[in-house]
Image (cartoon, rainbow, N blue to C red; front, side):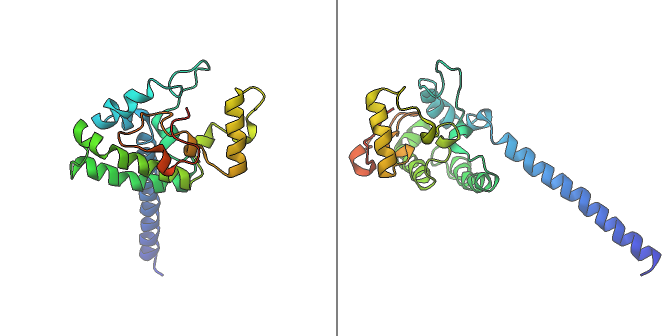
Length: 191
């Protein structure tokens, strides 16, 4: 290998490293930006309906001052699950910007039950993974809960339920047409 070939190979290596750092940094920056509540509510569909509803719930305002944001409930913390969710979210952006399927309040409401069922199905399939970022059923003190809640949580453990089985409607209003008898072992909005 000649001196010129070594310099060329070294230059390509350096350029590749620099481009890799730029691309990786850009990717992480985009992940961070799209994982904020501000990004989520930048679309009027999210700001005007789900976010408005969230503000009237215990997940937004409570005595402890802890507040769940959109990504807390809808984006996994683990990296690989987060990337998968971001890829899935690109489909949602497609339906907003390209097809216009949900770009008006009326269109959003018309698809709301279907959209909610998609989120519930995902939560069921992941054992309510995002709920468990803050709520750990094994750490719950049943003695400090109301009797009804403690009984239901013990039943959930015994029957292998996950959070979304009983807590649909805890952060957003249940969609029109939702029938709790169709899919929930513990009922619907048990908030």
